[in-house]
Image (cartoon, rainbow, N blue to C red; front, side, top):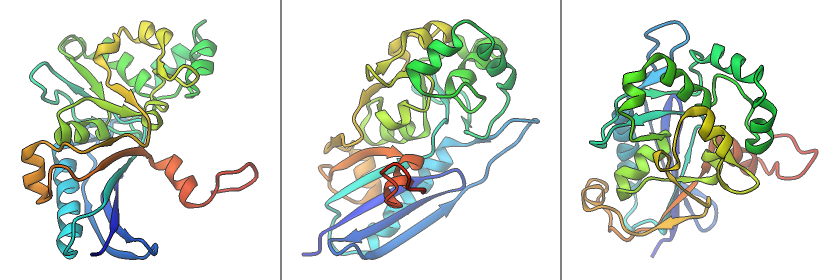
Length: 255
C-alpha cells in the first residue's frame, strides 16, 4: 500500500496540489488557474467560489491519479486576503487580495495615529494597505452597509476550510498577517479590534498550524471522492512555508 501526503497551495493566480511519497518523490501534481478582476484603480478582487472549484478540481485530479487515499492533506495559502460573510453564511464581497491598495489612505491615517506603534508591536504586521485591518476599516468607512451586515471577516483559507468542515478556524500563520492578531498572547489583539470596530466573534477561532481535522462534511467528502475521516492539516501561509521549503530557517540563510 502506497503512503503519500498531499500539499495544496491556494495562490493568487492558481491553486496547485502535489502528492509526495515517503521517499520525498513527487508522484502526482495538478494546477488550476483563475483570474483577478480590477474593477477600479487599486482594486484587486477574485471570486471565492471559483477558487473553491479550483481547490476541489486540484485535489480530485491528484487523488484520481493514485490508487490509494492520502495519509494527510495539508493547506497553504496566500496572506492578507479578506472576504466578508453575512448571517446567511454567504460571501457579500469578492475576495479582496493582498494586492488591493484601496485602503492606502486608511493605512496612512493609522500610521500617523497614537495607536500605530502599539498595534505594530503587538501584531508584528506593518501597517499597510495589504493588511486586512486596513481593508476592514476601509469597508467600515466606505461600505457601511456591508460592514453592518457582516457576520464574519475571513481569509480565503478560512472560506475553504468552512466548506470542508463547517467551522470558522484560522491558523496562527494566516492570523499573524492580519494586523488583528497578538503574536505574543496568540489571541486577537484588543487594540486592533477597538480600532476596526470588530468583536472577537466576528473572527475565526485561532488554531496552531499543525491543527488536524478528520471530520469532513459529507458533501465535501463526496466531491473529493474520499473518506470523511481523511486527516486535513490546516497548515500555514505561503511565505512562511516557502522559507521552510528553502531550508531558510536560521539567521543568515536567504530564501
